[in-house]
Length: 377
Image 1 (cartoon, rainbow, N blue to C red):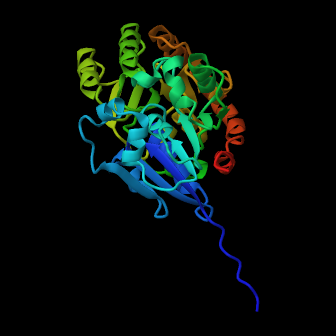
Image 2 (tube, one colour):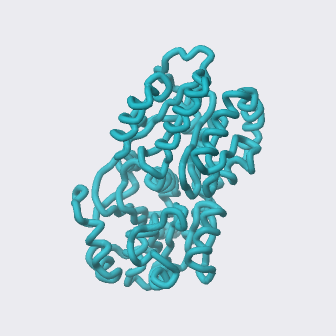
Image 3 (spheres, rainbow, N blue to C red):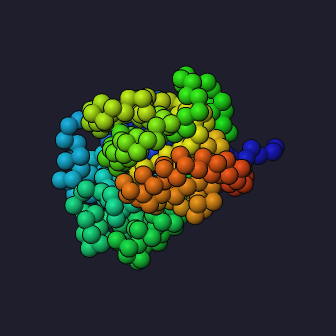
């Protein structure tokens, strides 16, 4: 009698992150877990609290579980900060995993560093500029206090070369550190960008799109100051559409009224599909104070809209030192000079648009997913 080949045993993968709502870390985690081979991997996403926009979009083969909080509970971050790593791990992580991934530094890294699962490969996935915006937990303040956390990981994965260099400059070179660029689902983004969006007819006005949480890091306050200055100098033929929500909204709305910017700045709120907005504007504008590898710059390139972006970690890698978009000095003055340059020389956007197809041909979602899978093996 013939024998039936046994099915290969799936590798059990844990992704641990704080929440699964709206944000860059959450979005890239969603894209990866939804596209890892379900025949090879048994995937679990565990979060400090339950629910959120990205969680609602996970595929059926991906399990999502909370620590045991069904919703955000005030004080949970304080609990993570107070308890030691081993206690946190034993309290909240239950499962015999082959790979345990802290999907951010900070709280998730602290928990996984306390793992008592000796067989599991432990990976810390760093998505931020740790020099400009590191974790607020006391363990990550400097190289000495972070060492007991990071030395527990088999591998540190950074999302850009600049992000890796910032990590090394703060925490040292003694860890096994690699770079894996975050994947972008190119076909999905292009398909969504075709959808219509209701924007008023702006005529000959140059339009900019911005996408991001309304937080201090994204620099929208600097943008408003720059717009007020430009209008005061007679530059009135522009309009900026901002997609996103966050705690800074009230302050930004007040400044828009105070500076009489209602005709030039439009806060659209959160858009489930920002790609159609980006595609229908003349340029994409990034005013962030710091980033690690801003995916939204890549998304603008995919839909063919030239980025005009502050020099943050990862931006130069996307734009290849200004080949595919305008790099602005990371300051209010730099943003002013950058936008003014576009308003005075709109033909530069045509030049960037003509070059962007060369960049698009280099972007492969499938290759990026395959590169990520190599760290799981």
